[in-house]
Amino acid sequence: MMIMLVSVYPTLLLAAGIIIAREMLVSALREWMATKGMRDKVAVAFSGKLKTTVQMLAIITLLLANPALPEWVLMLGYGLIYLAAAAKRIAQ
Image (cartoon, rainbow, N blue to C red):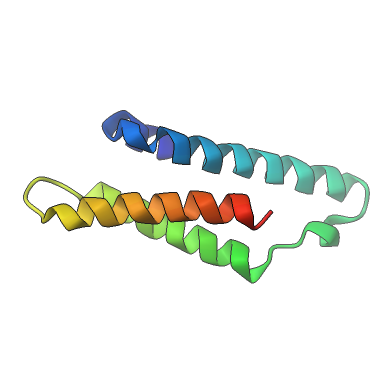
């Protein structure tokens, strides 16, 4: 969905790249730790769930944004997606 949103909103490229790269790295780390029997060392924290919630709200907002709605809806979507990208980078 992030890639599709970037095709509509090219200014989301940086945020989408950060989010996708982080998700791939964390997934790989969790799989690797699971093979070592240490999956609990990279358990999901509340902050991760909160960041995912912000990201999903951003995606929904950006999907709903259209010219018939006020511009603040689109700006809210941008703000939320960049907040999610920044939070994902900080919380590692």
